[in-house]
Image (cartoon, rainbow, N blue to C red):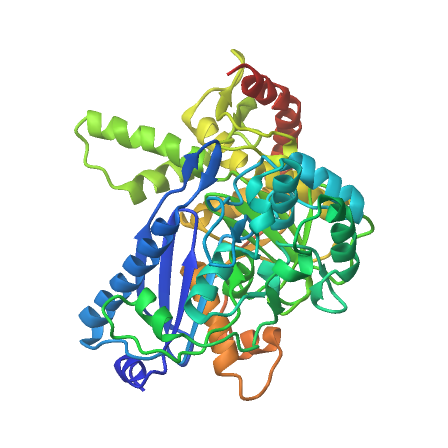
Length: 529
């Protein structure tokens, strides 16, 4: 069947993911191959000291993204999208969206990027004897309670961004288990919210006399493959303002970007892992067993089918690196040199590989926002050197590349050095790996492990959520998720692997020790500016 026939017959599957800077739609065929896509660029806003995206921006963004997908389909195949075999939504995980009974949002969406929840996260971590990160929904909710925010008494439902969009299009208040694990800890045995922690939380807030318990306001947890409702008439119009898309399309459970990253890199099986490196970065290692104890630097989440995952999440990754590259773009423009951003990135990144393994003593801190792993509630991007350091372009770029995964290394050292976690394969995806071989080599040195990058990983999370739609719609053999990915998506796919060199590992280890000592400089910058 041609791609055009697949679309006309309503057998294509659509995945849409809300990333930090881009909303992306990927349409796939019955062989799970992308056949069309659409995009919409957007940016978060700092409003009253909190990072947010407005409700209007959410709907304008997804509508524009879908409209651009329609244009791509029309340009390539000369046809319209009237129906789909499945549809799925994913988004940046965690954060806080609270609604009243009339479905009005009570306060602006608070994204994962906010770090104002330190008191709540600390108290809940102690109560649950479990690491509760600042960005998790339960931290935001409890911080609102601690702050005495008026809206808390009016809460009827809380969810994530993916859960919100899914709810508005289907009427179903549900979440995929991976996204739900960023709301409240999941019990691996029941594959539902941890009942003991729910009970502890309800007892904790009982003196407040609120008209709800946690059980009343949380979305239902679903596993990959389970049906999660269908597109309503109102939902179809809300997504496709042209009116061509018909209601009745089945939807898979909405997921977080961590889960879709695991899908896109075939990393849902135990002893596999992936690293996503873009605006933020995170590593996901699927565990064979629980860790020996809670760690503040490691979040315990799940795969889309409920396996336990150790997640190291860093708020900052490539934003500062991109800002420095933009300086070189401006220099080219100043000199009247034609600008090709791919060439600028490629030349600068490859230049970095010629630098000293320890960056010649140069340090960079890429903290656009706070970084909980290193104890920073706010961020100040810094470049630091002494007069005796080897200050060269190669070392400058290498230090900024190291900085993009420096915090990630600190967290993963616990997993590999302290907990002796074993992995068979780690796959990288995201913007850091776009320049072939460079980001891979830097990450391999940082975590002292071979890193693979697959061609398909470039399709990203929108492809990942489309695959979850396909797993729900096209799994007649009833395979488990890992086996289905191996057989139906990645069969014969070979990634390009780069192994760490002893020199690079030694250099990165030397650099990270200087980086840790230099964190005092970052703290001073936050305190004094």
